[in-house]
Amino acid sequence: MTRPALDSKTLARRIAEFLDLLEARWHHEGNPPDLAHPEPLDGLILTVLSQHTNDRNRDAAFARLKERYPAWEEVAAAGYEAVEDAIRPAGLAPTKGKRILEILNVVQRDFGRYSIASLARRGRDEARKYLLSLPGVGEKTAACVLLFDMGLSAFPVDTHIARVCQRVGFVPQGTPPEDICALLEREVDPARYLGGHVNIIEHGRSVCKAHKPLCPSCSAAGLCSFAANGPK
Image 1 (cartoon, rainbow, N blue to C red):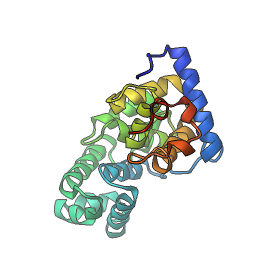
Image 2: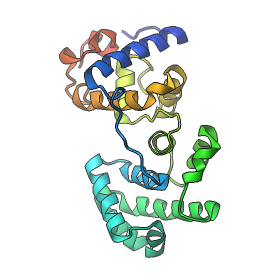
Image 3: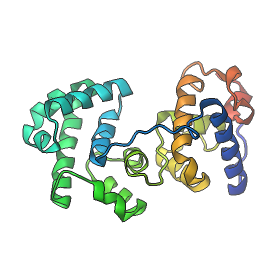
Image 4: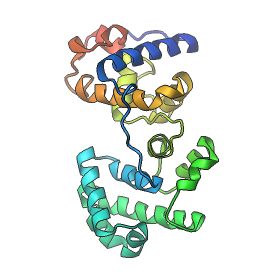
């Protein structure tokens, strides 16, 4: 049985209670990770590489790309085949290589150099709008760059966060990630975005797994529609 839709005030309270329970277990709000890159363009390309792969493959591809071509000018000059070969560990190298070179071309055209550091000064809405205009950049990628690399308010929604929010009952099953993002940004205190985001991911990976979730050991089971109905 699906719980009835909650009014905004009740939903905000339930989300805050859920985040409190996760913070008590994972502690990333009190001890937030430092994931920022000095140059946000690095974070942007890293996040593009993360699409449809795991963190290990993403990091291996990014490290190999930067080892071969330390500056973005060198990446742009290296050409498509060289970039594709460098990022192969991330998977989908033909598509991602093309997108990376297109992004670099647009950034150089718009900013006169391979840097988007000044974009943060435009504020969240303008920065988000620009990031979403770039080739291959969707809501999750834009939100990651805003939150981690620009210090701007955003709540990225990856597969773990989408799964957890749907299971708990904050949104119906099948809700698009961009709608979940909008909900969380509306109902959560911005001061909780970074730590709350990482706590939910930690919980999704360790407890609220895609397969065989560990509902009996979940500290938030009392709030969860999925746990109440019994995992299938």
